[in-house]
Image (cartoon, rainbow, N blue to C red; front, side):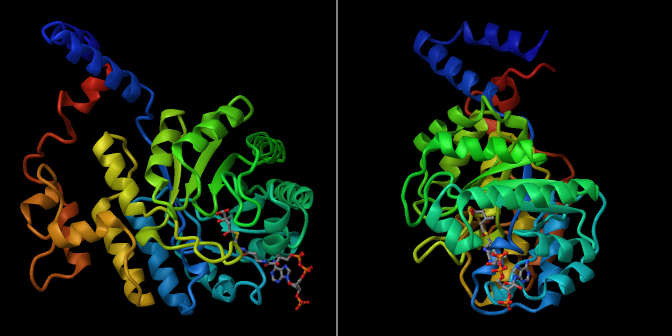
Amino acid sequence: MTTRLRLAAHTLRLPRRAQHTLARAQHTLASLPARVRIYELGARDGLQNEQRIVDAATKIELIHRLARMGASSVETTSFVSARAVPQMADCEAVMAGVEQREGTDYPVLVLNLKGFERAKAAGARSIAVMAVPSVTFARKNNNCTPAETVERAATVAAAANAAGMRVRGYVSCALGCPFEGAMEPAAVADLAEGLQAAGCHEVCLADTIGTGTPGSMRALLLEVLPRVPSDQLAVHCHDTYGQALANIYEALQHGVSVIDSSVAGLGGCPFAGPGASGNVATEDVVYMLDGLGIESGVSFEQAVDAGEFIVQALGRHNSSRAAVAFQRRGRPSGSAAASRPGGRLPGESWKQAADELSEPPAEAPPRRLFPYGPLSSVRGDAV
Ligand SMILES: CC(C)(COP(=O)([O-])OP(=O)([O-])OC[C@H]1O[C@@H](n2cnc3c(N)ncnc32)[C@H](O)[C@@H]1OP(=O)([O-])[O-])[C@@H](O)C(=O)NCCC(=O)NCCSC(=O)C[C@@](C)(O)CC(=O)[O-]
């Protein structure tokens, strides 16, 4: 008997109101993807706006940790003007030093043909391009018009595809521009479709300054999804107004299964004006996904370790709520870390704690319990 049938039999014994609640929960969970891919931005978007220049060796070590923690993609650097973004001046050295793991994608951001030629010469196998709907942001960030951002992206994508590279396309300011406010969802959808037609295997809707809400994310997805299918979409949420996780949850319910994030919540575009905060923290995203029973392949503990590594190098605070809570309190009951209050034993480094915690417990506890039982049964997965 499938879990769904067993569940149906079980719910008949519940009061009518509880049956409705359960049916609603089951409907929501049924629409969530079972697995998502994490596109990690800590080494590129995460660092590009930091004033303290991080040396190439530290960036390379960070990239290795991000790959080891299980991110599907680790955006490695950007091939842009060193005058415009001094932190990315060492892009060639970083590319040369990264030992690429089998099964991990290492895209680099490229905004024009000059950047593409540099990336190709440095051995990049995967790139990201961008299109911008806002006139002011396109001028400040890309030194061209919105239409020219699409033309440049298409030119670069064609060259990259001809060279056998994978191409992702960002639509920046998808939920708002720092200078022009809300963007028309239809205009964003036009750019998303344009990037896909230009040869991008994946289109990422970027809330560059984190002004979106689940309402505006839903309105945007309803406009974009008829034109670009959910399995070719990603979302990139900054957390300026504390909406990033809610926006991601909204996107998950529409079938989007590639999530951008940055360890320790680092990041931001240097051309987006003051007050825009970092990306949603990878640790927070993974904590939420683990709680939803959605596989990401990312180890929460190793994400905390990577985030701590880079915030210590930068001498700044960690913006991940989940990482900070984990360091103070450990994981809540039911998780492997819970048996070790504080997550880390006295004198133990985060790396040791993470290695220790990633070892499977002798008898695995039931994972991800939902008040009505294991999440998979509520979702109605067949067994
Ligand atoms: C847009 C460009 C490339 C200008 O593009 P351009 O208009 O083609 O530049 P140009 O021809 O006017 O050249 C200006 C100068 O830049 C040099 N140059 C031109 N291109 C390159 C290159 N590829 N590599 C190295 N140097 C370059 C070029 O050689 C020249 O140097 P000069 O002769 O004055 O000494 C430039 O303005 C630039 O690099 N801007 C930086 C933009 C940037 O990196 N922004 C942050 C990343 S975007 C982001 O974070 C958003 C995202 C993706 O995460 C999603 C989201 O949240 O929205």
